[in-house]
Structure formats: C-alpha cells, structure tokens
Image (cartoon, rainbow, N blue to C red; front, side, top):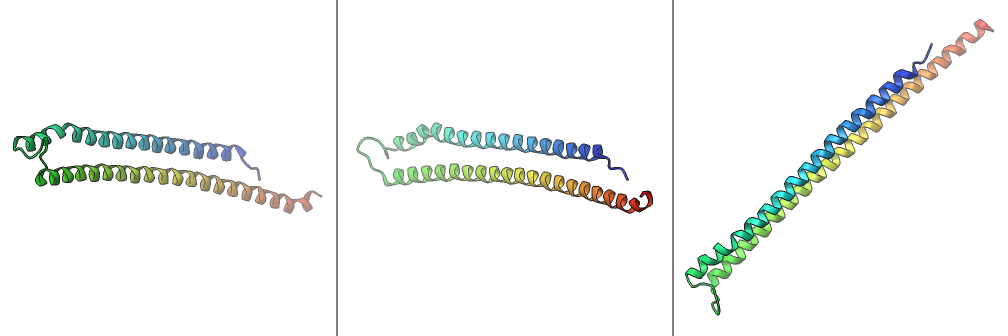
Length: 144
C-alpha cells in the first residue's frame, strides 16, 4: 500500500491558498469598512460645523443671541443641537467599532477553519501511514 505524499502536499497547499484568499478578502472588507466609517464621521462633523453659522444667524436675527443677551430658547436649542450631534457621531463610532469587531471575528474563524482543516488532513495522513504499516506487518510472515 503506497502512500501518496504529493496528494497531501497538494491538499495542504490548497487549504493554505484558500486561507490566504479569504483572509485577504476579509482584510480588504475591514479596511473599506473603516474608510466608510471614518468618512461618515468626518462628514457629520463637517456638516455640523458648516451649519453652525446659519443656526446662530437664525437666533441673532430675532435678537435672541449676541452681546449681553442670554436667551433661554437659544441656550436650549444650542444644547439640543450639540447633544444631537454628539449622539449621532457617537453612534456612528459605535457602529463602526461593532463592524470592525465582526471583521476581526470573521478573521479568527478563517484562521480556525484553516487550523482545523490542516489538523484533519494530518490525521488522515497519519491514519494512512498506520494502515500501511499494519499491512506491511501482516505481510512479514509471508516473506520471512
């Protein structure tokens, strides 16, 4: 019973190539996700900054803000606007972190699959070697 070592080498290479391909796709997806998240957060902050002047102008036109004026309506609106922005940016950051964690988990699963596949392949190879050795032992009495 001959053992085909080349078959195992080919299967091992195939498992490693598949692993590299899946890890590369996962890494690319993680990078693109991170870029999208950063872009969204940056856009939200920029939008908030750009809308600040018109926001202030609305209250200034009505005489609710400016030197020496302390309008409760203006203070409330400013707190609410700032709070909404902080909450929105915080949610975006939290969503981005959760998405990054999912890519990390996926990468770990890809690594675990490779490790398990290689272990299974090695067990099959060892089993085939053991069977070949047993077959040779059985033939020993016939050939002296």
